[in-house]
Image 1 (tube, rainbow, N blue to C red):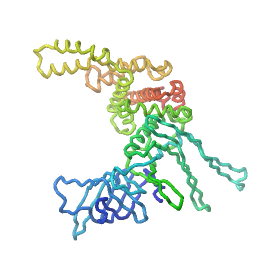
Image 2: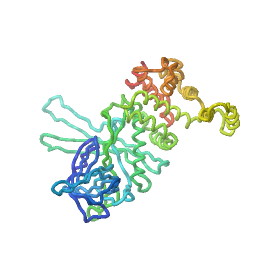
Image 3: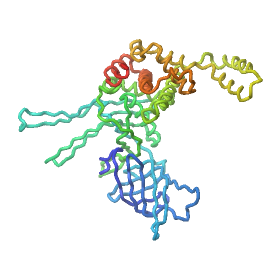
Image 4: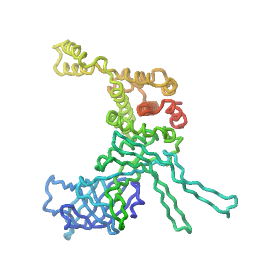
Amino acid sequence: MATKNYTLFDDFELKGIWWLPNNPDLQVTGTLKFENKNDISLDLLGAFREIKALGSGNIFQPEIILGISDNGKICTLFKNIEVQNQLNFPGIHNSKFRSNYLFIGKHFKNSEEIQFSSLQVNFTNLENWLAVSPFSLYIPKDIKGEWKVKHSWPIEFVAKLPELECVIESTHEFKTGGDNITTILWESNAYLKITPNKSKYFDWFWSVICDLCNFLTLLVGETIYIKRLKAYGDDVEIAPGKITKEIVEIFFVQKKYNPKENIHPFEMVIPFPRISKDIERVLSLWFAKSQQLRSVYDLFFGIFYNPNMYLQFQFLSLIQAVESFHRVTKGGKYLDDTAWKPYREKLANAIPTELEISHRESLKNRIRYGNEYSLRKRISELLESLDEEILSRLSPTKKYFTGIIVDTRNYLTHYDDELKDKALKNADLYWGIQRLKILISILLLKEIGIQETLIFDSMMENNKIRQVLEK
């Protein structure tokens, strides 16, 4: 299949015929375009509905569009919306759709049929994170001597995750090509393969992939994207007595901001070899705590996937992530709710009745949250959980996080002139954001069972992190 060579970073076109599952007799010619930076679009020389069916506010969103390309590729377009339907002079009807997902290799008539027995995904920098080097080159002293290239199958890991009722393992794909005269091509790609105990819907796999993407972003220290996505379906007989799995390639558009590739393991936060013996436990904890820490994941990794966000918003998102982490891991209330209730009522009843209703309601709302720890106290408790050596490196002054960082949050939240001169600005704000990212990374890494000394040693070998800590 030619499309096997395509990645989610490539652009390609497929010409063919297309139809809806509930009307297979109405087949329309058209061109499918996958533009990795824009969208998946289907331009039809014709339409699945007549012009007279159009009306004000009538949005046509067929869940599934089926097709077959002129070179035999079986296609399913999933989650579609019609963006154009017009009749041009002299009577040529055409329409256009945009799609969220493209499946190549199988027809699915509805979303219920989109199930797989396993799925494997190739991420940017996955090979480098695994620190595998399957190739070796022997160069003779005499340039006219015998040159040798050797490929050895890399060591792979298997992690059983009872939380997900699945297995996640590393696997590799080795390809060869060239004409053996002027060119020889050897290519090795690493994948993480997800195999549940029983077949799962695509949505289930998608949630696991997203959490794996965040997991690798944390450990690599740079934004990780998906390059290849391949799923396995039902058993099919390709020859008498020879059974294999259906292979379905999956394409979708990612918003990519200058993805960095070929990052060296020394430039990563925690490369795989440092946790290879504990990878099953680390992955298990990552997924076991994913729901509890969901708000932290969303706020923290949102910074990586939206790097063009204003520095002020990056800072506030990271502070929210810190607050959320403390709240879900340590609680953070002075009294339990039952004990606090009578005090809250006394304080609310003590509000002068002479004040306007809106003013009184505002004060009551503040009293409602008066039992929760302040940001300053939350950060203090988190810092106390860190090793002294890490803390001394992370905090340029004794009260950097509980003083300057908190003052900056308060200023950016309320824009109080009294805090204006205390708040971080410009380059100082940028470096403050980098320190917050390192702090949250350490907290998350500790939460999934990675030893603090290992985290510190690995970070001290990372030039980028050392540069931040030396500022």
